[in-house]
Amino acid sequence: MKSETINHLTPIHLSKSFDGDTLAHFFFQTDKKAAALHSETPTEIQDLAKSGTFSGAAKSVFFIRGSYIDQINLLIAGLGSKKEFTPEKARLTGAMVANRVSSEKVKTFGINIDGMLKGSNKATVEAILPALLEGFYLAQYTFDKYKSQKNGNQKLESIHLVSEDRKNETWLKKIIHDALITIDCVFLTRNFSNEPSNHGTPEYYANEISKLCKTYGLKCKVMGEAEARKEKMELFLCVGAGSERESKVVIMEYTPKTGAKSAKHVSLVGKGVTFDSGGISLKPGMRMEDMKHDMTGSATMVGATLMAARLGCKNKITTILVFAENMPSGTATQPGNIIRARNGKTVEIINTDAEGRLVLGDALDLAHDYKPDVIVNTATLTGASSVALGKLASALFANDEKLAKTLMASTEVTEEALWQLPLWDEYFEDIKSQYADMMNSANDSNGGTIRGAIFLKQFIRPGMKWAHVDLANRAYDQGYLAYNPRKGSSGVYVRTFAHFAMNF
Ligand code: BES
Ligand code: ZN
Ligand code: ZN
Image 1 (cartoon, rainbow, N blue to C red):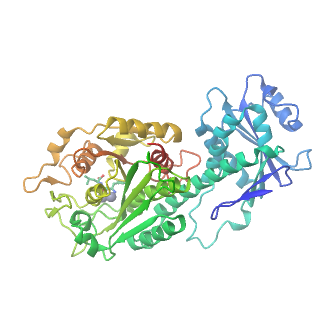
Image 2 (image 1 turned 90 degrees about the vertical axis):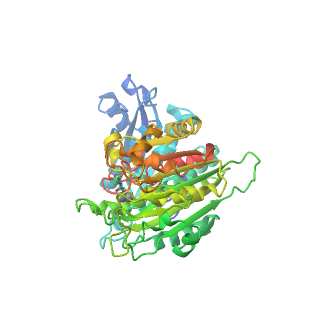
Image 3 (image 1 turned 30 degrees about the horizontal axis):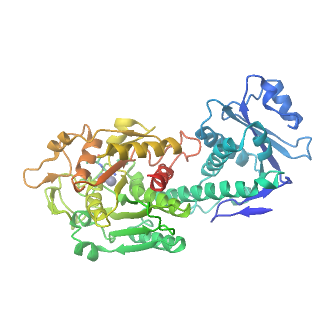
């Protein structure tokens, strides 16, 4: 019996037979109800199929307590029609199964791989199984580190992938290994994003990221305010000017072990505002607590960088994370202040709540120094992103159509939708300043997501390929997808940016 454990995730074992308490069978939907079920399928399941109660419809889950077979519990779940199958359906089914497994207080859970293989082939299992595991684990996520009473004793103890065929062992191990890395990295992003800002300070993230880099063999550099000042990052520094907590720039560098000549170099950049009170342009109190999530851009890029690194990415990655706390105080930046950015351009601060673009402006300029082929950044940049797109997709901007297409191709694999919005320079007219080269906000709130992107574009040097994803509308409270928590960070786009870094 081989097992795979990563950090605090429930361990998965490969087993030839199952002696745990609940064994799951997954089926595609079929018109001829029972046809999907082969002769070895437990009679209870066949009966459910024959009566039409279970047809294999996507997301349908049945639990049969104490079956004929050795009294184990059976769980059956549908994957929907084979023709319309997408891994996302397996992800959602996995999440429904996880909820059932937890409400039935299952302790040892098996998944019948041979049954799955009988209904399909290896390629199909390769599509289903990782997604199933992702949905299953992601749905169980809780952020309970500050809860006195944890759900500990009801917890699932182990998962078993059951296959009689020993030839499947290496193949299954690889699937499990990659899926667990993916899940672990999404959890890391969720944990970072959910951390309240009294604990999740710039210094906290810098320390945590340094430790992670050490663990996974990446180089890590941390700059405090004095070093950032030497780097002329005044635009970045003006955001944390009102905070007691020191701002930090963190640079993670991943170099592939096999230095292939074809290796490319991507710079990933993330907004890391650990709390966005709005500063002197103070936000209203309603839901201000959500602004602890305003470092989700950075959290996402940390998750994506480590995921790519741990999956053996062949490209070089330089990740730049800018952490600052946006607070009002006697030393805070004020509306009307004019700040010189690292690239020499001057910015008139109109609204201290438009601070994400300030930290990112200098971070994007710094990214060029590492000479990447492309720069991709993400940020909880504008509330207007929800107005523009609702919650099903975040906005993508790119100054290069091929880069936009490559990112879109990644989203097709990961099934985390992005929607491209235009980067029309005409919008720069709205942020021209009377006193400086530009303003950080316009008098018009319509089209705010595009203007945010146009502001960032001022920090991209000629010839550099660049894309920006404004994930403010999807960073947290995305419970409409069964594998996301109802409240708190979703961890969306970690998989997409990792896939991009590995395949662009
Ligand atoms: N962090 C916010 C954006 C945000 C809003 C994220 C809601 C998640 C949920 C950002 O710093 C901000 O306040 N943006 C302003 C920009 C405006 C002043 C130009 C906004 O969206 O109102
Ligand atoms: Zn703000
Ligand atoms: Zn913000």
